[in-house]
Image (tube, rainbow, N blue to C red; front, side, top):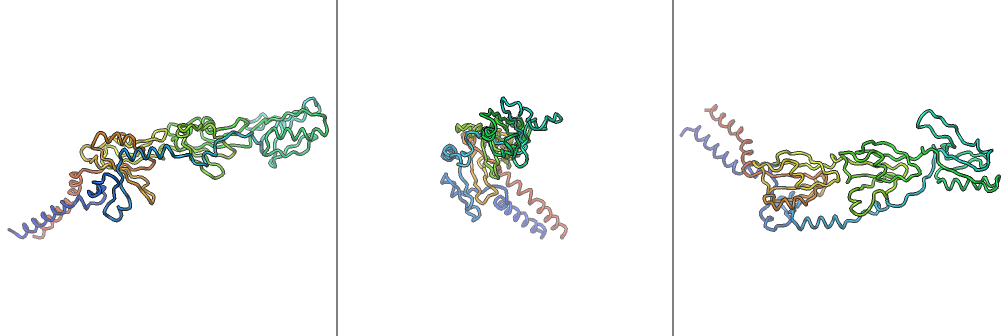
Length: 379
C-alpha cells in the first residue's frame, strides 16, 4: 500500500472517530439532560458546574397545580388596592373659569367676569378666570383664593363675605370651563392624548373609552397608571376576575395611563419548528405553550425531537428557569395547553440525534476534502 493510501486511510479513521463523538462536542446543538437525573422524574440538575446553577424542571400535573394555586391565592399588592375608592369633588385651579350668581341683586348682574371670546373652542367661557395665583376678584368680596377648593367651599366663603354687605345672600357657584386639570392616556388606544378632568369623576375605564378604547394590538393585562412618579401595573382582565371593578379606580390631575402593546410581551419560539417566530399573546395577555407551538407551525417532523421541548424563563436575569416537557405523547399536549407562558419566554425544540450527526458531518466535510486534496498534492 502506498504512503498516500496509508495517510488517507488514517485520515478517514480519524474523521470517523471525530464524527462519532461530534454530537457531544458541537456547542449549541442541544440541551443536555443527564441520565442519572432522568430517573428521578422530578427536578433536573446537570453535571457541569455551570449547568448545576440552572435546574431543569419537568412540566407535570403537580407543577401545574402548584402554579395555578400560587396564581389564585396571590393577593393584590396593597398599593394597588389603595387605588380603589370613592371619587372626590373636583378641585378648581388656575385656568378654570367660575360662573357666580347672586340672586335678587341686579346690581351684581353685570359682574359676569370676562366676556365671551367666541374665537376658538379652547377659549375660556365667560365668567371669573382663576389667575395663576389661584385667585379671583368678586365685587364686595374682594380677592378670594379658590385654587384647591371645590365649588361648595367657594360658595360658602362667598356667602360669608357677602353677608357683611347683604342680608342672607343667595349665592350660586359653578365651573363654567374646566381648563386646569388633565390626565394623559398613551400607548395602545385609538386616540391617545390629554383629557380634561371635570366635575364628573373620571375612572380608569372612562379614560380608556374616551381615548377610543383599546386598539387591536393592546395588551389588557399590562396597563400602567403613573401617579406622582410611581408606576402601578394593572391587569384589567384579572381585576374583573377577582371581582374588582376597574371603574372604581378614579384618576387624579397629572395621572398618566399607558396601555402596553402585545408586541412587547412576545414569546420566542425557536429550534426545530416549521416557522420559528415571535408569538404575541392574546388580548387578555394569556398564551399557553400549546398555542405557541401551534402558531409556529408545530414541530418539524423531519428534524425535531419532541421529547426535548424546553421553556426558558428569565433568561436575562441572574436566576433563569428552565422547564422541560416530553411532547412525544398526546397526553403531553394537555399539559402544554395548561402551561401559561410569560412575556419574553423562550420555547426551544431540540434536534433529533441523526440531524445532529448530519450537521456535524456537514461541518467537517470541508476539512476532510481539504486534507485529502492536500495529501494528493504533496505526493
